[in-house]
Amino acid sequence: MFRTAAMISLASVSMNTPDTFRQVPVLMYITFILDLMVALLFTVEMISKMYIEGLFVPASSQNLNQLIRTQIAAKSSGGIDQKRNRAYFQKSWNYFDAFMLLCIWASLALQCVEFYVTFHCSVNSNDKENILYNNNINKDYFTCSNNENFRRNYGFLSVIRCPRPLILIRVFRAVLRLQLPQARVKAIFQRSTHQVYNVTVFLLFFMSLYGFLGVQFFGDELNYHCVLKTANETYITKRDLAIPDSYCNPAKNPDAQCPSNMKCIRIASSIQDDGGYAGFESFYISIFTVYQAASQEGWVFIMYRAMDCLASWKGVIYFMSMIFLVAWLVKNVFIAVLIETFAEIRVQFQQMWTPRHTADADSSKCFPSFNAGNFTA
Image 1 (cartoon, one colour):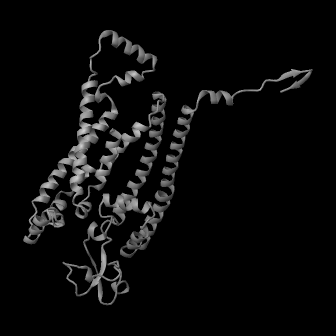
Image 2: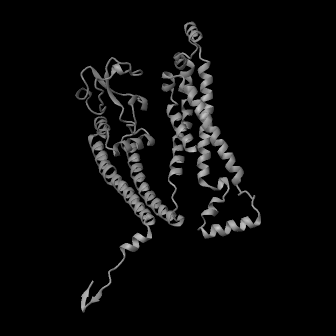
């Protein structure tokens, strides 16, 4: 039942989008009812577990004889029963379940606010007549100014729905129940985490290094464009730019870089105007630019831009060295360590899952025997 509820919650949050509600308004009610039912079910489960297991201290509802028997059984079973006799907040998975439940209730509260904003939209007389005669919600409710302003100013609140798809882990956790030696599993993950941590620091060091070098090399000097000579320099529009947009170096002759009816001036642009992180104005923008170049997607455009606006050797040296070190060397080392780590984890788990009789059968030997004076094996 709880696995089904988790799948329903996943389907509900997948349908919970403004475009979906605009196309099919009735889904707003369906998702709200489904989320409410799932939240109530998981709330009952959490309260029941807290009552039975105790909140922070295990529930002392056993007598002395039962307690002694429980401790003896826990020692004989290797501590598994002792782990089960923990309080609610002494189990790590219960923290995950409580966080998922909190996200569902927060999503319901946000949807109630969206209900309030939607039903307080101002509609014209024709819309009111349509609502009265059709007895349904007109789609214009979802495109009114109140809804648009709410999404523009408070749309970031929908981030509370982002962790909700992780509720699918409850399904995998219920299906995959493995009894493994905890000490060995902990040792495996500690070693693997140490390796991944080291190579991650190695990668971040080179990315930060080239991020700082990009700020020092280029800064905000990559914003020189060819614009019309008749353009107002205080208010440049896209009509004033060259087609295609051309970058230029103010230290060189503008006539050799721009058309005859254009000049080279500096334009203060933003991330929204450029359509992405492709610059070195600040450190965080430079880090995103280095990450994009490390993926080897679109890095040539920012390199040509740097060669057009500044001395060509700066762009060539910076980007060639970055592609060789970060994109080829460091990134491949990072991927190789990850692959090797997961391969080692797989081998370790296979050794723990392999039955003992299989190992004994593989290590069996054939002893020699003597038959009628002949030596046979």
